[in-house]
Length: 186
Image (cartoon, rainbow, N blue to C red; front, side, top):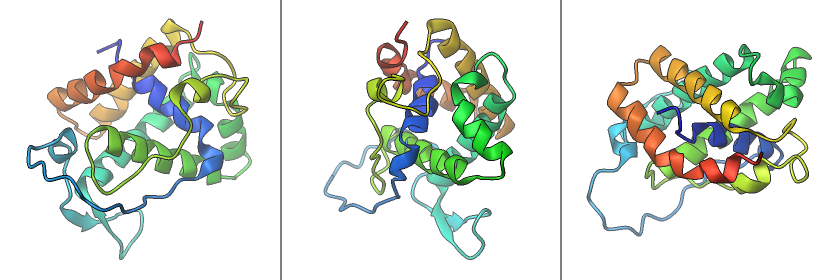
């Protein structure tokens, strides 16, 4: 699990904050009926969004967003890797939460798509560009293997704070592990 590439997701989306992608609905042209990891994470059942009273949200998206938001807060307190988020942390400290909101939305889009959601798109930077300070002014340095492993620890903490079962934590980690080579650049 420590080798999972969830670190790439968070840092990759820091790079796409300026793009502020939305949850665009797209036509469901797929006829596949096999359950996806997104389905296992809650799927398309509509539930009330506790962060936006009166708004409905797919249960899978809500669960993913909850885990990722918790993970962002865990990372903010982790001095081993929060230095990568200097721009974001400075904004939040100054009372500007627009970057945090964008990160949460973009990261949620990314993971929703990566786990098989049909109703969302990800429009952020490629993982390579998002993790390269030369192409992303929001990242404060290149990511090393130790940084990547530390992030995984933080993701597990965020997932456990939301009672995500271990088998789903492992499934998401395995899915995202393929991005490690695009993220670790030193």
